[in-house]
Image (cartoon, rainbow, N blue to C red; front, side, top):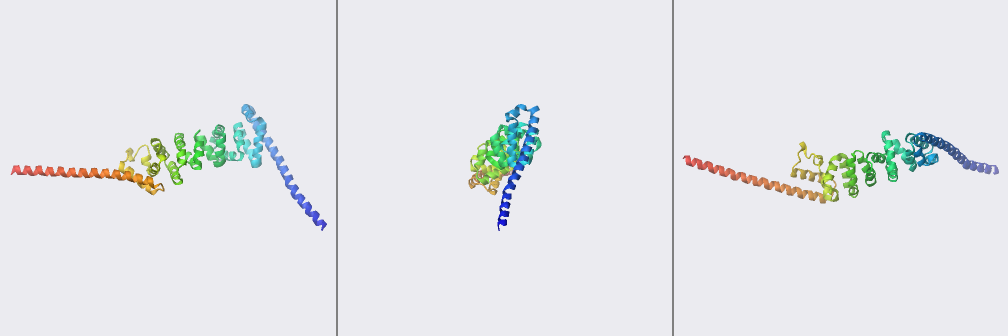
Length: 312
């Protein structure tokens, strides 16, 4: 019985000691890797970016970033972080140090040609962009890189939907969307999704419409018209062949589009009333022309009859 107890004690002791030994060994390996990586980054910076290295805290500062990377992702993350440090210098260390695992993953997922500009974007807006990268990854870096100053606004206010749409926008278009980001964010979910879908389908048309009618998103009726409008109406060139469609055609198209989409009834009713008014105007005009035609026809017939009587 005593022998069994001794075996149990030994087993428990080994169970407690073995993980500690393994952890100590791993920590030793990690420290060795960190030291080696820090030396590589410092050596690279020593000839080209000594001043930048000093700003990040010198070799000690690089070591601190790599130790943080080791804690989050082990040896593999340390080596990846060091590779970016060697390739891009201390600016990469500063960016990675804010959130090693997330930032390295975002840089990995980003096109290589965009990485230098992405690191500069983090340098310009470190706190905001780090938060966006933690939530949305490479998409946040790409948008901030392509649209300096407004990409982060779109990401903060419109989230993943906004970042996805912004990837296909020009910077001028992104500026307009950022200007209306608060209005889009306040829309009911169905309308917001509709506006974002419309933006992805026809960014140029939507942006042009918002520039011409800046208060569009402030009313349910305005949103309804935007969502119901066909592409040829939204586009700068007007209707087919470059000619703007007529009022009735335009309003009718908008009305049909609004009814088919899950938007507010108030907007649909408003557009319907305008369509009815326009249709009434057309009907009155047509009726008037028909009556005038009949009068002219009667006068012509009377002249013919008088001419015949004179000949007789």
